[in-house]
Image (cartoon, rainbow, N blue to C red; front, side):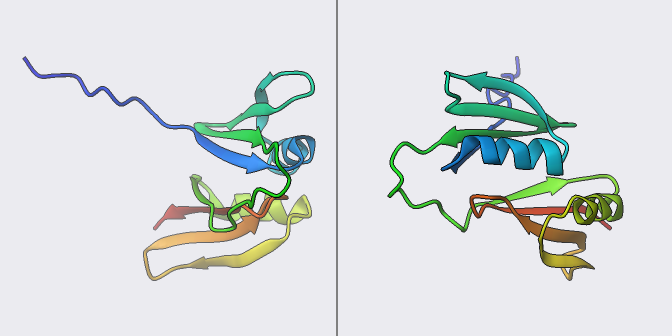
Length: 123
C-alpha cells in the first residue's frame, strides 16, 4: 500500500507594519478578495485571488526589520493583461515586463512593505 503524501499546501505569510494599507493594496490595486481577518483591530488577514493565497501578519515591534528580499512569484495565465491592470491601478513597476532567459515572461512590483512580487507565466 502506498503512503499518501502528507504535505498539502503552504501559506505565504508576509509581515506588515500597516495591515490596513496592505489589505487596501492587495484588494484595491491587485483585486484580491479579503477572505479572513483575525482580532479587532485586525492583526492577521488572508487574501485570495484565483488559487493564490497571501497571508498578512502585523508586526508588533516597529523596530523589527521587514526583509526586502521577500519574494513571491505569482503565476498567471495572461501576464500582459496582469501588467496592464497593475499600470491602470497605479502600481509602481519595479522591473518591466519582459521574456527572461529563464523562459518566463514576467514583471515585478513592490507592495507597501517592500515585499517583491514577480508576476508571470512560462513561455
